[in-house]
Image (tube, rainbow, N blue to C red; front, side, top):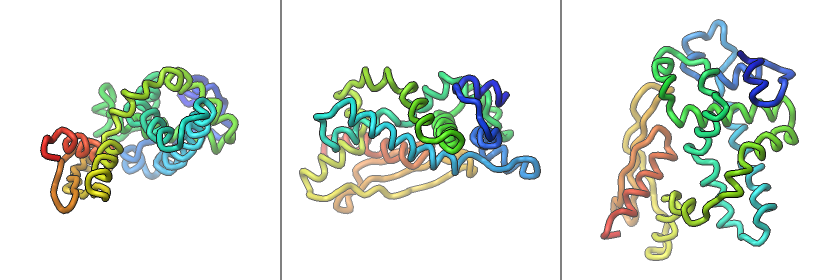
Length: 228
């Protein structure tokens, strides 16, 4: 299975243990500690940083006259959870993931957050095994069409946190504050709820399967209110 995934990724791993860890979800690791060397969250952390670096470099090269604020918004829209989950599906990454019993039941309808995290973990493993040049080539191949067809207006509209922050800063000369309301569910499948406040007034509430997505939903809710 790992050899098959390596072929899909276009790289023969020198250290297959890295790839194995990149496809191991923490739910599987916790149920199989004796035979599992770890789960993918540290690799996900690294892959996220590599992805941000390469996409920043790519956007600066592709759009040399665009300022850093706009580039930051475009980068965020390109590497959001939905986008990374789509790329993971294109690679059929879900079928290679090692999952615990609770996650295995949802393999056919795998959560976007899980797929996005696994995609970043694969990037981390690729970087450690082959270096930045190989990781950059892989990332650029995955994102080429998305960068070419970037819809500046639509992509910005989807970044609710940025829109809310700019609106609040313009009106109140401060930034929104996001407060955790609740965190529920097992460690590998949590659901978060956040409120967003300005001047101690609650403007919106949102829930999601990651802190980022919950904050985005809270910002979306705030922007939908007429009394903002």
